[in-house]
Image (cartoon, rainbow, N blue to C red; front, side):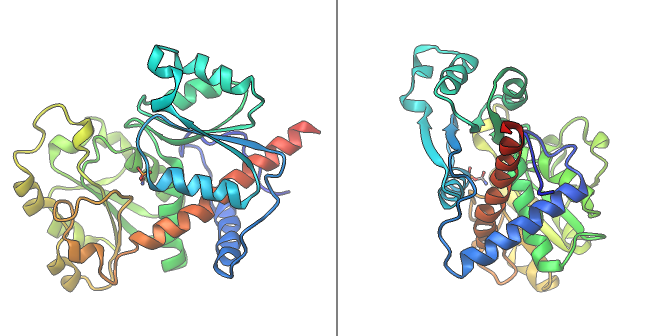
Length: 310
Ligand code: CP
């Protein structure tokens, strides 16, 4: 039976088996894309709306490219040019989109939990492309896929997320996915950029970058989310960089370490520019893998749509 997913709103609850099936599907798409295949008919007759209420470069484009490669009917929804600006609620907006017989809604929204709300109240399939500080499941899947392709598997891998964990939806989706795949997970951040309930996440914590780098096989470097900070959580950017930035000398100490970053990068703040461009950096492979992972996710949704239509 091919993998069928009704929605993808959260990384929590995705089993190791489901994740590995998604990776197998993504690997097949990755290989076919690499040899130049541009079209698959998997989403023929399925309509996909891309609704981004927050800015995005990578996620929006890769979902659009993934849906196009799979032959979906795609509609882009520009929140900034919509009636949301006239006060229409999210649920009313989505119900109007549904009334046009949309099958799949890929949405990014600034409200944590917006997708879970819609999953309960809307009739179409919901894919979370990032909700506030809550989750970003396809980013976590592509991060784990990238490191699985590099290391073969994640069992026992020492994996450290470094940076603004407090505001990071990437961290909140990475932790359950990497743990499901058997990785040892840690976070490294100043205490003010850790969630208050970090103890319940079941991860190691580091409070200085040198110790974290010495421990880790792979680091996922997160940016400081200036747009979500309303108080002085770090004394100065310069001090943050000094204590928590990943630098060239870390790569010289640990030449086999793998460096991830979900983007967008603040060069010279959370990592030195030379680190972003180093041989250890998998930042652009992450972006390439993002298309294959999103094709795998959309395929699993299409399988469920077809199964429930018959
Ligand atoms: N990684 C990520 O979500 O990037 P975008 O904000 O550009 O989509």
